Length: 477
Image 1 (spheres, helix red, strand yellow):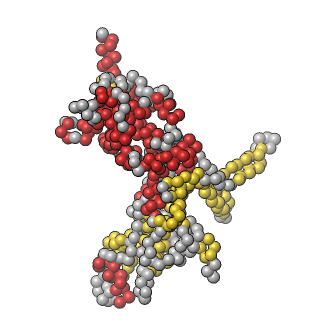
Image 2 (cartoon, rainbow, N blue to C red):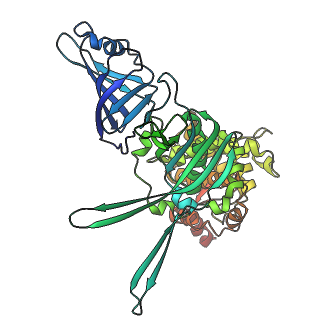
């Protein structure tokens, strides 16, 4: 029996089982807070009541059992990786209270010993952006109208299309639709709800810990963060394995269902605000452009390009960031990418002491993309030096005061665009996308930022000048 719904602020009372023979069950309360799942256990001193001796020991030694099971009227919850979270000691007749936090909470029981770690063959996740990026749906509707153009028949067909499937190392990955129908009725109205969403799924031949599934899911979500240019969060995880079974009262197997798993690794994301639709309106690429081959390419390149991916995706996927953070993290990413791209024609102009410099690594990225900047950026060499200079002044205290905030903000915008395009290119499906940027047709927003701030990068040294002063000087001359 499973707990069907468990959201922030919900709580369930039940009996906590530690799996040790002849150990008394104890009452406990299961809660979901913004920091994760928490189990509160009231108890008495083991000296005062022998039935609580083992519980008293858990909290005095701060070593609760690693895995436990809570049975409630609503269903079972299996708790894995339990850690001491705090307690107030029992003394005399005063009741103590201890708190335990599991790493993973499975909203179902298992047909396996509690001492065994949680391993599952399949895991699927719901996350921000998947519906918009994939453009997949299980729903088709056809409205029929009468002679007066009024809709009198609505035909709705619900059928999941074939999933998109590819390999990520030993894992088989899928993107697929999932639908659910609910009929609601009260004394006044009747409602038919059809839920139609896209899931990301991983499957191994042999069961794996949830962490391994999550690592593969994150690789895909990191690509989406680059493509959308905004923070995206996991909202729900479900797992399936042969040890998780749904049975009738007489023990007959019904199925091995997908059941919800709540992880301490992602629960904080669940509480984040969902991104606005406007943020998801124009990804650099959509699933139909990337395809299974592009997702395979991204997965194959991920390990080698991790030093580029992780700093960049961490800041692009962060809410309420400082512009200096953007410059620092994206510049680190460009430095790593430049080393991977390798030598490019004309890079000698960026050398320092006859050796590649930070500006060289940035130049390699810019030259590889070959973006067609307008006259607000003098050259790729000049932009590379401007990025390098700004990065060093932000990073190193011995370089004097922080650079002008307008320059830092614009460098952050340029860097973010460059790392997003580089990430898209790792799919092998970005040729048409890059061509639009090479022709300059997609750069109007960036150009307007430079124009609105009345500055440009004026030479190969990366010098910033005011366009107002420069235009005035031209008129004087």
